Amino acid sequence: MSRWWIALGLAATLAAQDKAVQDKKPTVGSPAAGAEQPSVVEEGQLPPEEDKAKIQTVYSFNPLQSKKEVTVGLFYMKKGDYKAAAARFREATKWNDGNAEAWLRLGEAEEKSSDMPAARQALQKYLELAPTAKNAPEVRKKLEKLKG
Image (cartoon, rainbow, N blue to C red; front, side, top):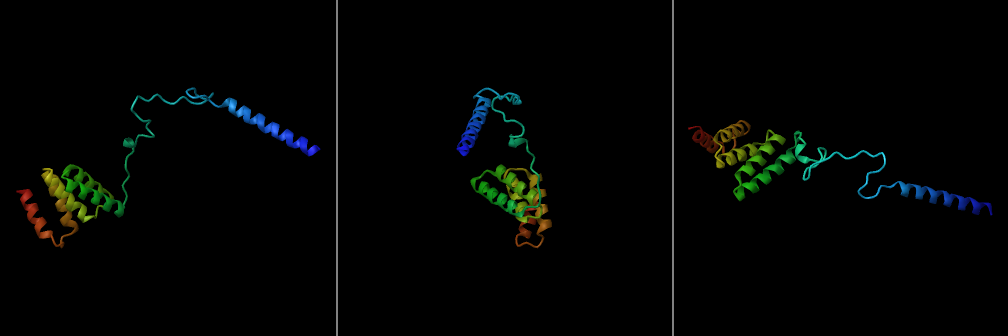
């Protein structure tokens, strides 16, 4: 019989604790007692820790990410959005500075978007990285045209 009293007492204790926890839960729209008030954020803005635009990208050597950026850049080139393509190729060069294809494509995209100084710089970097490439003579000719 004493086991029943122990079980009943334990159940009553748990029920009382559960009731106490439910009584302390905040209602919708009211802050919990002692809880910090969230900082006031204007409508349409995210708090700084959730705003992805405020997070700075830290670039490290990542050839896979560089290749992905080149692939996306090629997609934009086919669509005719040369500024978006150039942005992707530039991003690819930040992930892998030695990605010769990214530099070549960046030069082509900059040339199509009429940014000749940036196109020259990108093509020069391509020639530094791949001086014996198959298309190196063509790129040198294009570079001469851009200089003149």
